[in-house]
Length: 204
Image (cartoon, rainbow, N blue to C red; front, side, top):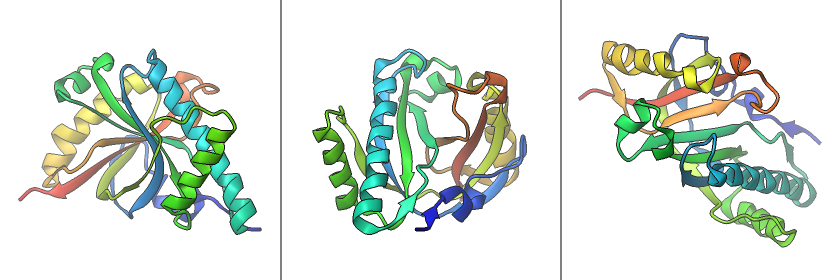
């Protein structure tokens, strides 16, 4: 049985040069997602969201393998980040942040199959409140690789919004998107690899 790995199947979406922005065209992607708010370092809701996503994602993986004869690698955790007042986001006032944490699913999985997996995980005693199956259409986007602590992303984001986008006639057209290429529980902060993505459109 062939095992699908989205990183291999869609390499442009999971790679970017360190400290240099590139433009990519992101196809529509499906995700299991949980939305919430609060400081990701301290919020119980954030920790619960991550646990929920992985419980549902691995249940979905094994369900599709058994029922459909199709297997895949559970992808990396991803997140969309914003704030009701974006000054709070830029100033790193994390207690006011909003987030939608996500794990991608292959294209052969549709909403009924995904929700069946959620219900199956729930019957095993998993707390899966708030999880949804969503389709995200980002299209033209700019991305770069950040290596280091999440709290050190500021200069890269400033360079993106104050230099690269204006210099190239672009403006944001969606939420700030992060893809976590390694596990922060097992990786020193200085070695964390995070793909920073921003959907864009041409300035009218």
